[in-house]
Image (cartoon, rainbow, N blue to C red; front, top):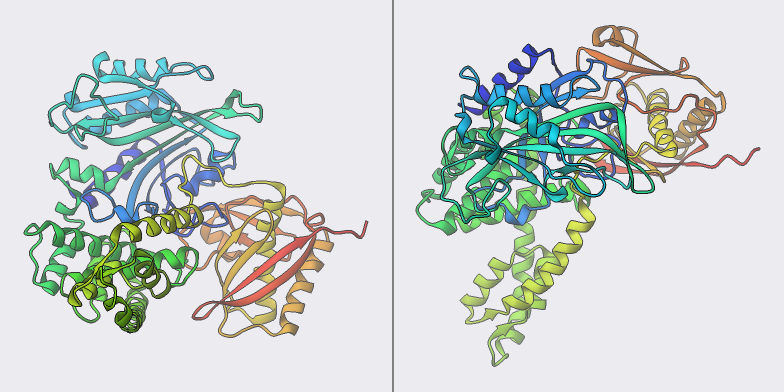
Length: 600
């Protein structure tokens, strides 16, 4: 079964069970400062898992593009990926454990679906602890499906519990479904969850039935939800009997591109295979980031920094394979062609994707030249060192200051009869890596975005700001994304040049006038076409369901949005723009705050 076939079968199966297909969302999360990218299929559904009504109803299904960057340095092996797709289905206060497990079992084993032999399946359920009882209910439902007791494993919280993002919030046990791929057992204790590779997880069903309270206790939720996830890449690898996703149709065309460019054959040398996998994965991820409706350009901060790192790592490994000059856009085109049907927004951005990749390749090649020049300045002193060793701190300086890869430093060193103190470099690099990982991204796990009063006020302010910008600058203004915390808001929008001080002052005044007017904020659920006819704005390039939520702020603003919003504008505070600057070509960025109103 191919990835395209799996995607279609999954969606059609859940539609036959009363689920509504919804559109997957952007890779760039909207109004969620906790992550740089959408890291899980459930991420865009967070407000609805928390209680917001979804305009499409209580049974939903979709496929969602995701990026995880915490393990970039592990990409190159046969399993890690930066970009991946998740299939998901949700119950928002509708069915619960029984139906969820029955649906999963039917789809996995049904002859017209995945047709996996039932005897290959094992499951894990929550073992319980002093806070929450053992999940006997899920275990019994699995027995009812025909899974014998010896293939139902009770595992602790670290394996089978989905917790809230913060200290409090919805959470609950999960049941994970594994397939035995036939490898020998690693010992008597071997079971699903073991790292030996005998069992591979294929599906995860999360049962949000508790709320963690401030005092650390757990209360049962009146409105229980189900959130499930199945990874497309891993599932087709299993279904096709492959050892790695790189052996499937999702990567073989990309590998062929690299083979043609480099003259290297995949499978001949492990060192070359690692570089080929890195090039394919990183170009694939970069293509989707650049092809996203809310794409970011390569930069030195946030998501743009991750994108730059992916592109430059791909170039470096292309260079290791003997590829000279610009080569990324040819591989990117193969990615675009492969995903033209499920993700048409990527195909629609092909010119932009290829242009940005070439520009970043050119910048990096200049970086390499600067690094080589700096190495040349260091060389006379290095050659006088009787130990013929380049200190790791100098090698790390070339990497950290000039972006010069350690492998190339080692090559230059060898050409001059020197060696690099790699242990010292690795120590410095690990410190750098730990700091970068801690600062650049928190992996989203069962997380629920901040819905505090102040964050909600800032979210509402983005609607007022966009309307004010259009009134002052023109109808060409479209939102390109936002990032909100409880302390400030950031808003990106299309505009070709810097705003003048007069324009900034006018925008501030318009927003503050709407806040002072204490306008009511009302929500309607409407068909998308009807929402457009009434003049409701929608995020530029975003995909929406056929039925949407429209928030009206008095008569001033009408916008398609998922929420949350304040009930009235009067207590939001005083809106102040603290900075207006360039974000990328043709895109400006406003940073603003809501200051406490001291008039009373």
